[in-house]
Length: 307
Length: 66
Image (tube, rainbow over all chains, first blue to last red; front, side, top):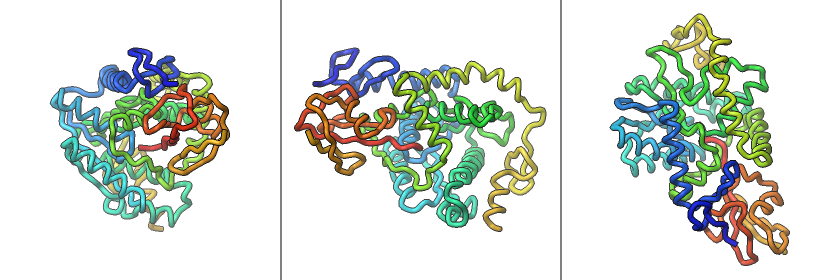
């Protein structure tokens, strides 16, 4: 028995449990793209004259985001540059970067690749050999964000698009509540990490209202060449547990992930008011990049690795 | 019936009843619908789709990160 599209009666490709709709390829693609554009409008993420870096790993989220941003960029005459970071993970990153390069060629988007080896002095494989592999994500997150901010500024970009989806957002909100670290949510959102400083490149997250599973299905129905392979070091235990928990709840109570994110949005202003800091960031005395302390986390971690 | 599916490219045998939906199959193999992408005879299908004994079913788990 074939499930029919709720809109046209055609063959459905997806069930959206939270809206009790089954959609065919055409209506799903329309719905997906409309929601992407609506997020861009709702949070005022893009305006004419923007020069946007697109953080592109070659995975499903960033590749889908690149495709959709390219459309908007052409319509609004906005410049976009794809930026990839090669962490130096054997049998993994090479493959995804090849997919990223292919996507950029197809879309005729400029593509820049930066490596951990050159910018940090170590590959992730080397870091994991030195340190506990379960801490890999902590090192990787710090280094990636440092590189992306620095190179985006050097490329004279005023915004950096990150492919975080609704699942990522709901997990982040819940993780910080569970850890009693609500202050970490102050700079979280569709326009994230906002620090008013010329050294900081604003982050935008146009996929933040879109469920992860729908991103995957969109990439498949649009025949995008994506490697669905997981980072061999992926193992952030706490996020993994929160992810499992949210997926279970979502199965039983569809729409929960949206509600978690919307709840956060409704208290965001109050969080900012409650946790606003009087001091702004300073410049790291080692590398000159923005830091909350005299020496930034990136430089401290490198010192640890060299020890 | 003893039915053959592929899960992330690997063949797996599952015992299913005559009229089983994709949703029921996913429960049977302990894969959350939130991380599953399912193809029936090469086409993506939603969870309400029923499985016939000659259907080729491929289940892919959506990986985190990207």
